[in-house]
Length: 486
Image (tube, rainbow, N blue to C red; front, side, top):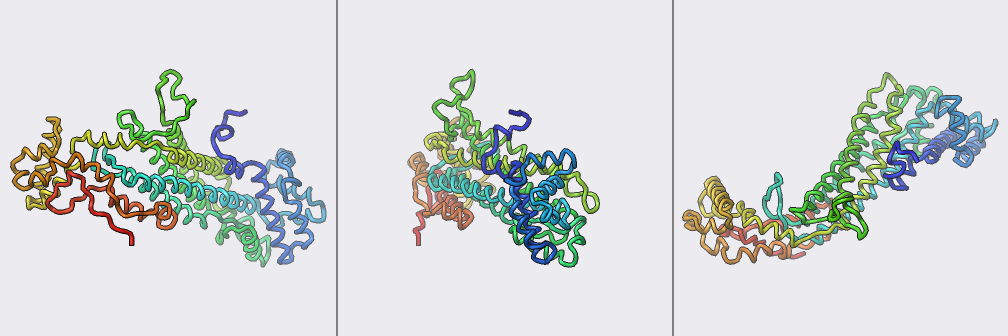
């Protein structure tokens, strides 16, 4: 076993890795050569019998990787070795028509389009699975109250369901980006040495259209010797963007699993070991792995962009980089998607710990609600902000509840009654945000059909402590009455 590339033994799932293995790549090249022969037979450049024989022999059963490698040692040209091996397999009669009029990049780039089509299908399915995992959590925890945090500090209450709905919405956007880019990415060419199609003669355009239609890929209508590398760069950019989202999701798990927060945790198997010396450890290693791989995927953007400016109609500076970056990007993003989906599908969620962390703020998280209530009594927004800020600082210094600081302040109590501040009911009503029924939603339906807009709207309705009247402070975290389904 070689340790040069961990993809060979540690990362990657069979289906995605299989797309880029030698046999699969060779088969795609042969598929293109066969499609070319069929297209040329339609316009009379190749006898139909020859095209049928080329199609029959254009399989890895007849053209072996080993034979191609042997020929490449002599030719020092990978595609020419494929052409010679296929010619051998077809015999003299049909073999003389193999690769007629084509240049290497016609075959190579179109074969790459076939590989990318398969890869994108897998990634798209992966995104569906991740969206479902988030939608399930969003639906299950739409009334699980927790702290919202900004700058790493307590902000205002949200629900864990809202957090998951936000993630699901981001996945929907990533899927939309992938689907939007796909027609521009899955593109091949059959236009010869410098894109003029001269070797195919006057029916060059018909041949190219027939080949691409046969294979089910788009046409590079204005080509040089190669398909424009801006297309591949866009694809790698989409995957890098997706990798950043996956790191975002998994970073949230890592932070919420910190000992001092402990609101969620990755699944941990009975025999799993967290540390070779600290026996108590349960580390978020799957999330850390995703974050680590994200850095590799994002790093592939630079060489993908540098592959765009080739000399004149083409040079070879893109070739070596592409052999690395396209398979690695696809295999690693597929691995990351699978791991992230499993992380959230099996995530341990601790609502009691979320509640405890919320209560530990001693009402500080309801400062905004207090400010709005005071402003509603005529104090003015800026003056209300000043007053609540000072009282919040005082409450923190003295280790008391914010509501107690409000009750002790003459200006606050002149405007708000004890009932409005909610001194007696606040502790009980904190839980109401998590229990009150909001508008019902079918999260999975929203993921698949509405891009999560409904889920996010529902979560925001349930997840924010909104006052019922301008006179209520909102320290009670009261939620408006539920909207009934139509």
